[in-house]
Image 1 (cartoon, rainbow, N blue to C red):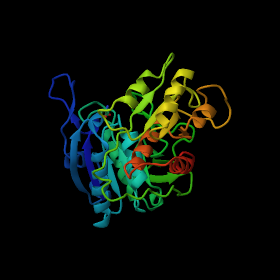
Image 2 (tube, rainbow, N blue to C red):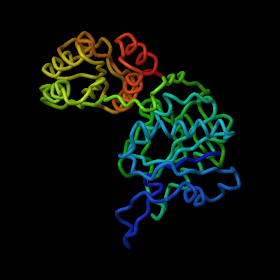
Image 3 (cartoon, rainbow, N blue to C red):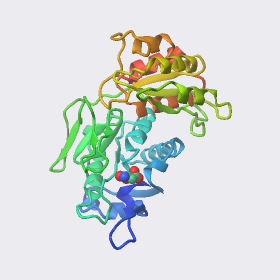
Length: 333
Ligand code: ASP
């Protein structure tokens, strides 16, 4: 069993008397050593991959973690656990899932309370993640997220609370499993969408794919400024739209101008539910945005849609057909 630590609250400590201003300091070995009973159920190889707050993680760091996880499995690990900060956990888990091409479980976890806090949840979450990664029933399920005794699929899980220890939910589809009394149980059979193939150079390629959230009165000027900024490369844009993926009429024109240059995907900013296909026909609706060249994200959240577009763009220019096919396959259960 391999545990790789990237930092986050689970690895954070405070040097202040009141326990405030925590920062990631703990190594993977220290995290593993703090879990009661871990040594009895697994022989752990722990490696500190980074000690970062998760807002400072990026795609290249996540892909390096992917390489480390693959090497661990190739060296004989039955499963792999990655610990990190919870703020971007839903994103790293999904990026790992897009490329995880092994039957062995890769499980991501973290904590909402630091290691020194009363009722620290890190040890319990790490133990759940290890149990999940060791269980044969977890194989062939892609990347999983273990949190608060629940097991979630990486592509649907989201951080939905800023402070609660039950911060992770999978809107609409729910968790797929639980860990109870040391037993890992799933309510659905093992299935997964086939992983993307990583092209040569992908580990160093880092396309620029911003996420633009729309808002009341959006006139499209922010999107136009991004599109027209000659100083920075642009490889694609994801729009977090209202409701089923809608924008204001003036923003729709900016979407059309952008989609004429680079792939544009629209997603729902609601946090739950899919983008529409044919329900509305007004300027800025899903039908209008599609006619202007944009593609709906389906059930993927804006941040996950952005990672899928990033992964596609990292292989080179993305055609509209490739975009439609990728979101058609990966944007639905
Ligand atoms: N609040 C965060 C966490 O839970 C901090 C981070 O994401 O690094 O770990």
